[in-house]
Every structure is written in C-alpha cells, then in structure tokens.
Length: 199
Length: 175
Figure 1 (cartoon, rainbow over the protein chains, first blue to last red):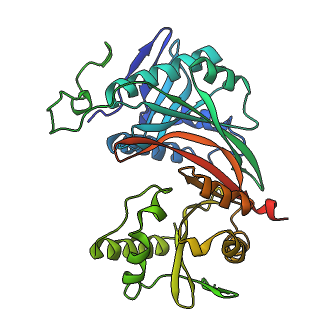
Figure 2 (figure 1 turned 45 degrees about the vertical axis):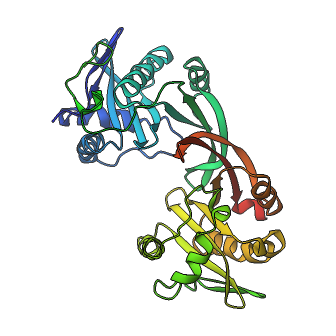
C-alpha cells in the first residue's frame, strides 16, 4: 500500500523513499547538518531507514520524503513525533549543502500543505539546534513559525549539549468532527482522494 | 541501585501495585492535584489499579519511574520521571502534590531525587511541561527551575487545546 504520496512543487517534487535510494540516503546522512549527529556506519542502515519510513507512515507516526530539485535528490523532509489525537507533529529537513534555502522552504511548505489538508494537522513544530545554519530561523519566520521556547542543553552533541529553539506554526482552522468511518468524507480515510489538486 | 530514599521526615519509595491502590486513589481522585498535568481525576478503583500496573510496566521498560512521597506512612504526593531519553540524557518530571508537599517540604525531598537522576541515572536535563498556574510557577521557581517558554496546543483536554509551560533544571544548575 502507498502511504506517502508524491507531491510536486515548482521546480521539483517530494517523493517517498525507496530501497533504490540507499546510496543517496547514505550520501545525505554522511554530511549531517545537525550538530552532533553521527554519519551512518554502513549503507545497510539506509535500507532499514526506508523500511522505517514506510512503517511510520502506515501507523501515522511520521512521514518522510526525498526532496528532488531538477531531478536531483537534495534533501529529506521528515515529519515525526506525530500526535494524531492532537493533530500536531514535528518537522525536520536534512539537506545537502547544495539545497538552497528557498527550495528548502518550498519543500517544507508543500509537506505542510499536504499534512494539513489530508490529516488535519494544525500545529507544526520545528526544532532549530544551536550550530545549525541561522538562516533556517529566517526561513521559519517566513513560513509563519514563531519561537515558543528555548530548551537549554536540549540536544546532545558528543560529550556536550546544544540549546534547542522550538518554533511552532499553529493554523487557525476548524478541527474535524469525530464521526463514524466515512461519515464526514474524511480524506484521510481515502488515500486516493485528491487533496488540493494533489494526490 | 537503591531507588527508595529517606529524607528527614519524608520517604520516597517506588509503589507497590497491590498495597498502594487505596492511598493512590485518595491522591489522584483530587481534581485540583491533577489540573496542571492536565489529567482527569481517577475516581474508580480499576483505573487506579491500571495506573499502578502502567507505572510498573514503564519502570521495567526503563522509560519512567514514579515515587510515592510519604510522611509518617501518609501519602503526600507522587513524583515521576518519565519519557526518559537515555541518548539525550533528559527526562520529564511530573508530580501530583498535596498542600503538605509545598515548597519547604519539596526543598527537602527534591534534591535527593535530583542527585539520583543526575548522578546515578546520568541524566543531564530534567524538564516539566505543565499548565501554568501561579502556585506551580512559584513552586518551580523556588526549586530553582528555569522558565523556557510556552508550547502551544500540546494536547486537547475537556474539549480545549492546552498550552504547556516549559521549565527545566540542568545538572550544571546545581553546581
């Protein structure tokens, strides 16, 4: 079954991870942009990551997409810490150095549009870790996020720690009503249903 | 590793699933003691039994530990470490405290728990996420916690989205 859809955007697309992507995933995670993150030891772990991405999406715990720009994989958008009951989740982008900030922003917006439309997510969070590119914070503000808390030593970096700035974007939208399966034509119950022109 | 402590007049001990049902129900059925979590009071015996079982299972899975705080064998509160993240060396505190465990009493009780968390469990960061009230804010401030912000719409309770205030205490804060 297909749980993670392909999502086009101007100049590129988000697409689900596949086992054939192990090489590019290994390249991506070999240059971690998050401080303290260790590169993978072996390419085999990337195959497990692909399996994990499918399991996460199937159980509504998370979703992962590769970011393709002009046919080249440039990064990954991950949604995790998904709380379906409370309609919130955490987002993260891991990009190659060549992933421009504007493309990162568009990829993130595309994922949020989908998750908001299909799964009614209204509370998006993003954690910026001290040491990451500070321009990411500017991008978050441009997307409508605001800083809500700074977690002191919230991220482990080797033997030390880094502060984490937690940003949120809370959409002002009506929540879905609880009902029987299919009662309100909930698009999350129909994976083939088009949302916002995308499938 | 000894998980039970005596601190002057107070004792902190891990609960016993069979013996603590009545006392824990007396504590957790008080709505005012749970409002900051937030959670609904436990007013039925089978739910308290379930809660005790969950506490035991989470302890065995090394993801949480809950202590009962007593004085003269009288239950005064429950204090828990949960969502223990061994990689990040962090955990979340949660408590339900009767008025008898106000700031002076907690200043006796909590340091031992903190030493245990930081020295024995090798944690670095303890945080509390809770509904902000003047009483809880004053207690956390008095115990040396640092306010870090407010996380919006973290959960839905009684039909409303609930913001949670975030407070933390680091091992290095104690130096």
